[in-house]
Image (cartoon, rainbow, N blue to C red; front, side):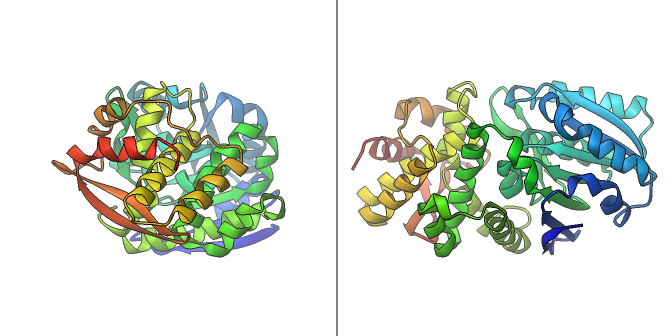
Length: 355
């Protein structure tokens, strides 16, 4: 197996993220090293199903696993309780047991949905993840957050459920449309802004970027943060840079803006507001915004402060009348910044106009 990196994640249930190229075809042997042959509930969307599901199913079958496939329409609109219940009913019909495994093959919606199903079916069964998008590789597939959206907001129902392992084949990114690469670049830029000045510099000069190496660096940092704060009570909240405003933008757009696009706008809004308040320099905000734009990401906010504030009040990170924003101090260093919820609209207003 042509592995680029193996990254251990030392959570309460430890596992390893394997990163490489052209390795998804060996998923059966990889899983057999983690779990005895059993029944695998393979979960994927209709896009990824036509690209990689046959390859994965063939590999799993050859390694001694029995595979049942569940395919749902791609996109955030499928990340609902209705899809979740349909999947759970299918698993029950197929008599999936606690000795069996759920396998998520796809992007963030797939990993969130399949992981949540594994967390609640029979009060918890094992699962693994095969991320096929840049976004899921650097974000959704690692860390154990699973869930679905409710009508009131994004990811409002979910559970923490660490996988048995993650197999990340960066060769699958070659089949992504340019918009999906841009979507993942937003989370990559986010990680660099949080902790990695060298990665940020390579992102500023996009032509020199080694994408597989960048993915491994992002995963390694996320693993470190998750190990320190598995349940998202403190340090892990740093990973939400741009997300409070970004999730509100996503929902206001009725998910016509992709997650990465909305998070890019959210980061730009917070950076501009932080600069105006003297929490970071104009140069720090400008470097972040220019890097996002260099990767084709939007940075202008199309919604009013009141529209976004109303949606953000339902954000899962709100605690009573307080909300924690993640604020950049400089490239490679951000901090948690607690504010009264009443101040959020002012932050959005200040961050929605150019310096």
